[in-house]
Image 1 (cartoon, chains in turn brown, yellow, cyan, blue):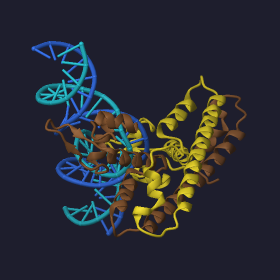
Image 2 (tube, rainbow over the protein chains, first blue to last red):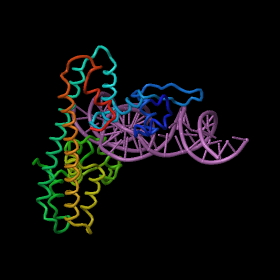
Image 3 (cartoon, chains in turn green, purple, orange, red):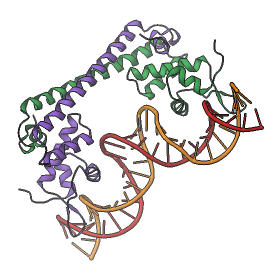
Image 4 (cartoon, protein in one colour):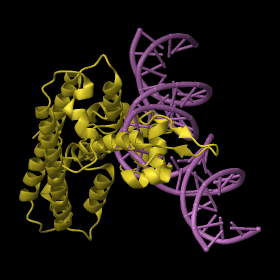
Amino acid sequence: MSGTFSIGRLAKRTQVSIETIRFYERKGLLPEPERRASGYRQYNDNAVGRLVFIRHGKELGFSLAEISDLLTLRVDPHTTCADVKLRTDTKISSVREKVRSLQKIEQALINLSAACRGLGPTSECPILEALETVGEA
Amino acid sequence: MSGTFSIGRLAKRTQVSIETIRFYERKGLLPEPERRASGYRQYNDNAVGRLVFIRHGKELGFSLAEISDLLTLRVDPHTTCADVKLRTDTKISSVREKVRSLQKIEQALINLSAACRGLGPTSECPILEALETVGEA
DNA sequence: ATATAGTCTGGACTATGGTACAGAGTCAAG
DNA sequence: CTTGACTCTGTACCATAGTCCAGACTATAT
């Protein structure tokens, strides 16, 4: 219902800063908008949808490149829902991978911390010793 | 037992590239080594220990800044083992936080994927629809 | 002696995702 | 009509963690 509006309004509506909106435009994530005679960018509700799409994608851990990819799929008549689902499933795998890796790190850190009673000088700290030790495990 | 050696040997022993070794030196993570008359850097086993320390720290998810911090603690006589343990425990918390966040993302992606049967054109894809929807949840 | 391999410095460049100006022009309210 | 808020372009800069290059010099083996 809002017709057209400036970049400042778009920023407020989407919680994305003006600079970032222009940055997305430069990156091709947002199409170049219409301009007023003065050169001011003029947006409509499509731009809101698109920016919200980008914001949600980021919240789901998609990179800007991946989001750009999804945005392209969205308008390409030759791609199907299955393509989108595939990318989503691939992303799920990579997120799981990252979780597993972090859990390994967590366990290693827990082991280190447990080995240290927190007493004495750093010269006797088992954490630092372990970090400096060459061998595996 | 190896006395001194060049940056190339150090690189091979530690599995860290020559460029990266020089980069760490610039960043203050490695002390400036002795030089030969020719200007060639000359290392000893201390450098191996230090580089291995950095490598292990990175494998545990510490940033170079954090590693630099730990390296400083290691030689500062005013800090104790407890300081190191504290940093380690803080790191454990932040890793756990990251895991939780990724698991939330994973679940959201799974929900999206489940909503999509992978049929039809992108214009009817529930994943893309969800991404563009403004409302929460 | 010479060929090949290694090393030196300094700076540019990569990717990611923005942020921060300066200096000029424009819009809207009083 | 003036004032303050807004927007424009272009460029530089931030952090992170490197990577690569040119052009010069050095080390080592044969």
